[in-house]
Image (tube, rainbow, N blue to C red; front, top):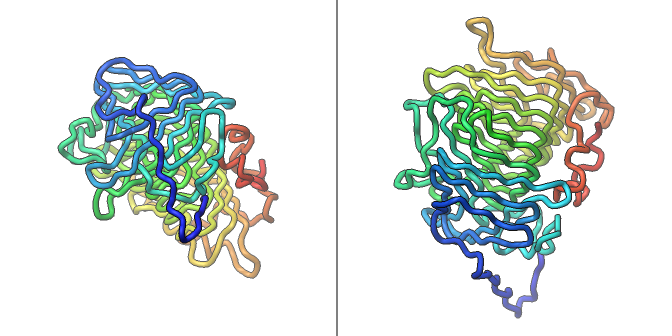
Length: 377
């Protein structure tokens, strides 16, 4: 981050007014290549409407906390068509970021700076495991009905998110209540999410609340809380992903909260634990499968905390973990409760499972910064 002398004042953030958004999007709208759009409030794309974001567009959120936290919400029944390209990704960031169209890296903000705005929230009509068929998403005040998610349509379509980078978010809206980088609430499996990067979010990187959406090629870097968080019986697959430097758990994978007992799959992942508090945090009733995941950068106190209790034929499969264990320690020091049975100790860089890192070349800030060097495969 740029600094200034003690006698100098930090220059004010210049906020363009031509594309300043202060009210909800209530008609089909296109944000065009070469432009920057400013979120001046919590902006919802309302039901029945589509927001199209062209390649290379930059969206910047103003600072704000509580009810004034800025965010972009895709409400149930609305769609986002955010199709960037590897040459021109779509970037969500803060108004404090001096990045301009055509840039990948911020010229003035560090990649671990967080909490400067809210985040991207996509809500749908797919099933969730909760007290009701539809509930209010965390991070949005109950008074805002655009925050409702959940329903009965597993094939619900909230649009397309492709080659999108989301940075510096996670504003507080209340005590212990922040906005995730990418929140997916009741999102259906007709939605396409492929190539997404979360950088420097104060809360979780990506959090699923039920739904059935599949996500491919996801990177979570420098988040303050959990990198990957699943709740309310999400029933999709996360395939080919990288986690670097989570703040709390690399994975927090919770069990159902209602009658629905769907199961999700996490496969082909590479995890650099760094300063994370833990590796994998599960509930006794978590329902999921995990396979082909490589962990390295481990330190004392980080662990895979428990396996789900098997009942009714089991709650999922755990296979093909590899980990680089610090010298003088054993796999069972980190992978406890029997999780050492499917984890093999390998030399750093000798892993045969994990993410295909080339999927993140050229378009991510993490790759441009060198943060992905040495991740293998």
